[in-house]
Every structure is written in structure tokens, then in C-alpha cells.
Image: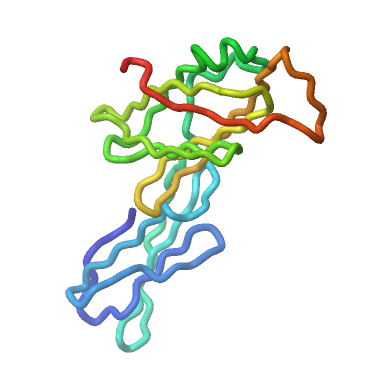
Length: 183
């Protein structure tokens, strides 16, 4: 999030990140802001430049810098390449992730299900995800707040149901359940 106060003669404030340039939100009092969290930025270091244009069309000297976008880490999926349905649907996977204390964790499954879970006051979320049918699952995790999204991380695994033999043209319908392992 970028922001500040501009001189009364400033008409526009611009923010350039990488090759793209954006017009910052501003008000009559000269307050301006730009929320970069909604941009689809990859994890890594990004350069920015900020400059203002006044009533006469003069451009200020740009302010330059860098900021880092961190990839969300999700602990708990380390040893889940193949998972038997009996364990996947009962104990499942207990995962933990860190994020902003005022943020939310968005979870999207390729089964069409999703969940939004608030981080606690220390910025932590711990939940259990159970896989209720055999098949291949891809789960996406991202920090989200309002319309602002962070960089997503995905985890995939195969849940093996030995009682059912299926081919690539008739897989089971996959579905998940998410709950608090402490509750």
C-alpha cells in the first residue's frame, strides 16, 4: 500500500510497477493512495516509481524503491504424494499457514469448493482438510482481503480409494471438508 499527501496543485499521482503504470486514488485534500495488493504480482522483488503531475503539467522527480511479495507457505502437505481414502477422509491433513493478523486465507479446491478463513491475532491459521472421495485434488491457498489477493500457492495430491477402479473418463466426483482440528 502506497500513500501520502500531495501539494494542492497536484492533479494526478502515478505509480509504476514493472512495465505497468497506474493512476493512484486521490481526493480534494491532496491525500492519495494506491493498493498494490490487488495486482497479480509474482513472488519476488518488484521495483516501483511514484511521481506527481501538477496543474501546469509539470512532473515531479520520481520516488523509486523496491518491495517484496512473499509466497504463502503452507505446512502440512510435505508428505502427501499418495494418500489412502481411509486416512484422507478421517484424519485428513492438518495444515498451518502464516499471514497478516487482519487478513483472511482463501482456499479454493478444483472440486469447486472454497473457504475464507480469518487469520488469528498472531496471523496464524490452522485447519484440517479432509478429502472425502478418491481422485486427484489441487488445492490453492492465498491471502485475501476484500478484493486484494496475495500470491497463491498450490498443493496437489492423489487420494487412492482401493475399493473403486476408475479410468480417466469416469473419475469419482471429488469433494473436501475443512474444519478446526481443535474443535
